[in-house]
Length: 243
Image (cartoon, rainbow, N blue to C red; front, side, top):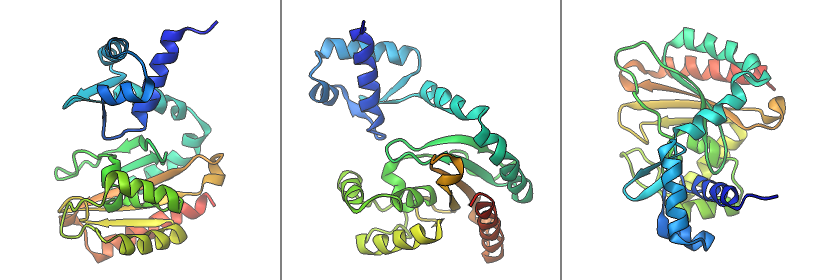
């Protein structure tokens, strides 16, 4: 026997997961045809247990969802195989590193290594609005079909965050083609001034077709051409282990 309230709850969670930039109650009503009062009560319950968060009248997936999704990987064979190699990179460079699940609709962080340097990036946002100007985002977009890219750009546009942000769609398409071939991407102060990020895709075939990526973020003051070359080589070396 189906429990209708549970069906409605999971339907709302699924829809909200499609909107990384948040969705309003009225838009949820339009997508589900549920009564506003029903949606309101379900959302309030999910907010109270941190499954959702609310900001500026919009609803987003909350920390509890992240915690539950991360548990899938915590004791898995994936992490048992990959973490020792990531820890080795972290010891070499002592810079922020994230292991990501590259889900097209809801990319998320599986593991986070925080640098011990006093000056370091304090947060790492995974907002699809920033995909065109971030290392992780360009890796993600390079896996999109032409139709998926067109839909993404219609929805999120090409917002200019810094003077280095690529806002020309033809230039970005060319860059994504290169990234798709190389499996390597760089954010050279394109999302935030003073921040440089390097990232690689991890071959899906090695991990049961689960799309993963590894990203390193470095403050500009500790980054020069030699550092970039050393980290790039280490990331590429890491990638070959899992080919």
